[in-house]
Length: 84
Length: 227
Image: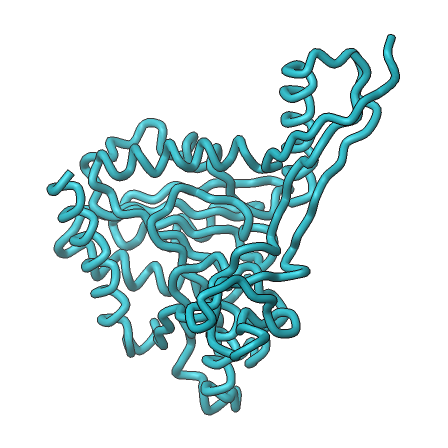
């Protein structure tokens, strides 16, 4: 039922943003779900953002040292297709 | 009416929860309450760990606990035996706690009279990960009977935790678990995370865990004093 909270979060966000943009109708909602896919870590040794080793590891793909998660767990509303 | 147009939003789906959790965190800080949440799969030993900690910390500190389950007040009844203030959050069909549930549960509690507040989440290694509760420390528990690869199967929850605790250490031999492999897997999912090993039944490692909380609280108090 974690899905329910996500769905409610999307509805809340869409209603607020639609009103802010003066929308009469919302035709489509674009969402971005990272869920730890395409993970990017900040590698202290390389001093740069690097892809992580194969999922679910957060070790730097280049040098193997432990990284800090930068991208990969996004859960966001990216955009709305609206009619005004 | 015009043709539909695309507007960029870039807004977190759980924004409301994030905002509420931030405000809770501020309230806890102002009150000087150190808040620690526990997540794990069902049966990993969250309640047993808390039973021990509440009884132990109560000798020197003012402690309270919230405990989440889909149904029953069993865990609240167990924890209340320690003498600490305990409140059950019954989530119904919801598989995790969120900030609004915590806010409602503590509404009439005088936070300034609490040194530690523990929040035991619903037993679940998936759903609680995305919901900030305003806690200072999030503990993820994994018990020896669960095997070595839980951190690889459920990396997200380990990645949002501040401390990992291997529980039921007294069953190491019976379960045949490879503790070194489990430790390595936790470190891979959450590089640099502090890992403690405990057995709440025998008390092994429990004093070290307690000291982690005590020093976290002292660190906060120092910061609060400076600012």
